[in-house]
Length: 186
Image 1 (cartoon, rainbow, N blue to C red):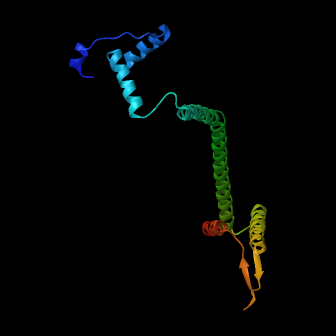
Image 2: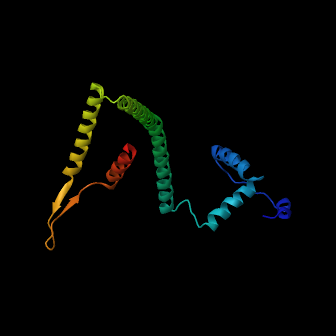
């Protein structure tokens, strides 16, 4: 409605329930300056969108959408609570586990360095102690078990045509780690 017509127009009274009128006044304050303009905006919206409050399918759809939104809100809250109560403690436990593994690896490297120094010192003195002999035997046992593990992964392949051959059934990551460990030992 234009501003000029607004001042000249006549008003008409409509009987509305007091509670509904109070709700309308609160709603109208949020939407526009006057009650008439609010009502016109609402009617334009419903007519422009071709929406009727009596349309059963539309109301069912809106109710379904509202229930669906409530379920999504519930799922979101559930995920947030689960993250707070379950994932963070699990994350902390894994973090401690990795820190422990790092410390163990560091200790192992230090002990290997100590053993290597002791062995080198004994070689300089041209004698092998009982401790050196024990370390050599342990290293030999470790190498033997590692080689046996690799040999158990070797399979004999007999193709229909051609010669039989041996195949190493090993993951690529295991092969790479074996190569890396052999490089480090040199």
